[in-house]
Length: 212
Image 1 (cartoon, rainbow, N blue to C red):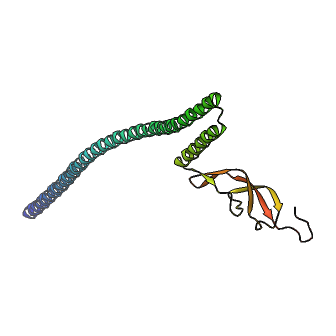
Image 2: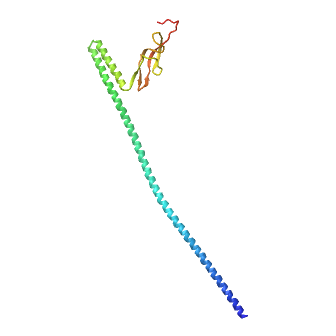
Image 3: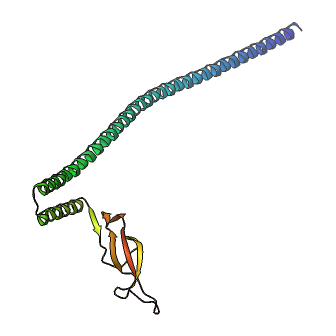
């Protein structure tokens, strides 16, 4: 009886020992799993830190590029403003030079006109005076032509784009709508009408009307 009891006690101890070993084994496995998880988390953290560092470097590069682009934009903007000022100044200077050339041309004509007037004071030759005035008129017309201004021909058919009819005359000596007389010369500048010619235009007479 005593032996049986000892056997039971021994079996019980062995079972307890096995359970203890199993428990220790489970704890070791659990601890190993925990350590593995910690290692994985540590590795993830290290990877995340690397990514953060790389992003910081990229951000620094992006900020540097942005600063360079901003500086370049400001430089281009300033150069463009300087260009506009320079072009405006050059345009004004060119305009002044053009005006001076025109003024100098007129000065020569004025000089000739004054000479003709002075000559008329001391000379009784009217023909010479008229010839002088005609030369000045020719000089004026030539001067206008040199600057792109041309006379509108009046000895043609009436053109509403170039002529302004102030009067009409019934006549058989001229074709209908033909210009009979120019009352005031018209001018064009580089093909554009700046003053239409004022003219008298022929119209056909009535059959029963007497033409004078």
